[in-house]
Length: 325
View 1: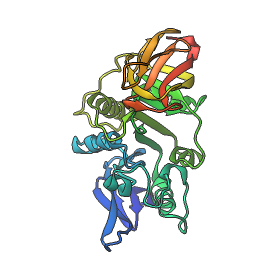
View 2: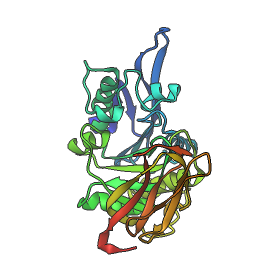
View 3: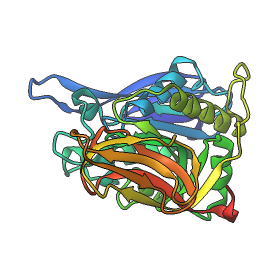
View 4: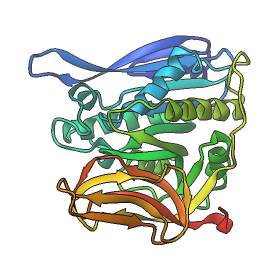
């Protein structure tokens, strides 16, 4: 058995055709109980690419966890060839505490590639980059909108990357959103390591949404099928529509504090000056209509009923590739 036939993580060797769940001990709680991150590995007997699927970098982004959970529960992660590594909850601390951040107050997605001697979040990032990413050829990371902001299902990639653009279209989310890799993010660290990543965004924190979940699971199946890794027992459906590529966008922020209700649907295309929602007060004396500053697609909506002046309430496209609707 050659070295490339064996995958070694945390000292455990997994041969072709084998399955394993390896646990990484993040730290001990103050009660001295251990806290582990399970890493689920499925390998085909046939060699092929190694794909990583992750979620829960932010502990409050439950829908991403649900997508990877379904991929595992349905056996989609058992490849026809190659290897699939699933880490459904990277930030297990945040997941347990229903908190976006680590107990040390750090955002895990802002400390990559991490340090073995750094903060708790930094040590977890270091482990992911040292023990998992070196084995990976391609990654999919599943996220949701923060707070009460509901994201339309979208794939985020950098502009002018032909391979990622191709895979983003294969995934089949309604939108492809060009966004630069943020400094010290997981996506940026993987890019520097030579591992291309599709970052999926959809839904909002503390919420599981059936349409978002289905979009994520079906997209993962399409990508695996494209890579020749999807088991033949799974059917692959074509995306309902061609993905809209958003090159530029802007956040609309509340001009007033008050009670907020959006009247426009997520994914909707609006014209300039269309009413998107309204801000009122509890006393019936104030009603402000929020209008679109330009024509574009609404791909994020704040669903909080109470907002403050300056809060982000809508994300609208300002530039589409080839100026398509």
